[in-house]
Length: 478
Image (cartoon, rainbow, N blue to C red):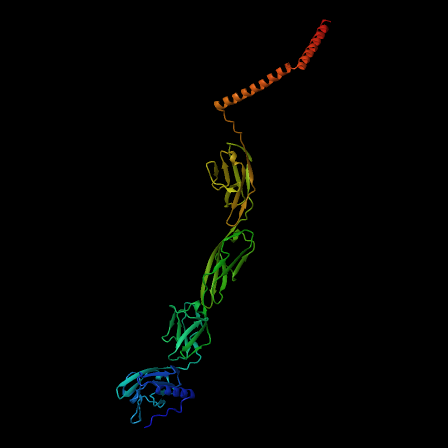
């Protein structure tokens, strides 16, 4: 029997060119090279052809056999050829789609996934017998997958969702994406062995979004259209705003209740156990003390069938007018005492005292009454003179009185007694000064006596005095 033609009718042009090039290469190889086999191409899609290309067959070749698998047994034989008799024998695995070439290469046409695996070429020569192995990779022709699910909506913490990527391909890797990112597997996510089925156990709100599955193999990849899963959750424990509980008498009060929920929750209010309204917000114009109490926000999600609530205590505080300081006398004597009283219209307020804008603390001389309304200074010192103010506050506001300026009258301090040494020094200085003055007077007096004009003037004055005395005597005789 003649060996099959080197150009089988089912070969496409590129395969014929590849085969021709391979054959030329083989016959030019040195006979001493080691025989090998390779798959051309390395991987192929289902329905295509693959060439198991033999290299470096010996010159003294007697026969060659192709088997599927690693063993040289009859049940795994595909085809064989004997050189001497030019006889071709087909084995049990021959399907009619295999073509054997004179150089020992084997063409597999219209391959299926079952034809993936190890093939081996058993070579008989005059010297010995050898086997070479080659692996064939056949992958399915992929198409765009779709996602099939047991539900499109789920309730958080209650429902389980199963997503399947269809159709199921063999030898295919499946990947899952959520909202455009690769899905991270945790203890609430289970994947089938082939990753084609994704199970969300007791879904959470984080599973809500757009899912995509990707089917891929070395020869192709396809993404499904997005599948949207809606997860109902909540309502969580609501929050009431504003967070503080104190409101001023006479002003408007506004409360808002907010709860995380999907879909949006239904809201209502109870005040001191009585229904108030069925809205998310509550407002009261010009609150009074009668509005004190417990305000409860009730939330309900019909889709999840769950309820929740939050209680807020509301305390209405009185308006805080400006206080003033009462004192009997703003001028006090040192070493006496003084009482200053902070007058406020409100009860239950906190009171502090300041002196020259600095907060006062109790000392041995400064004491406060049990509610800080009265400040007593005993005894008063001149350092206590200055501006006093009282400050009143409630949980909402703080008010400061006008300052009261306290004046302190005190005696000037006496000069200290001089020591004997200092007194003696002062006396000595005074006596020295007197001595100098006396010396100057003496000098001036005798200087005038030495001047003739001065002597004549003295004599004239003496004559005038004598004549004046004489006239007085005459008058007295008459």
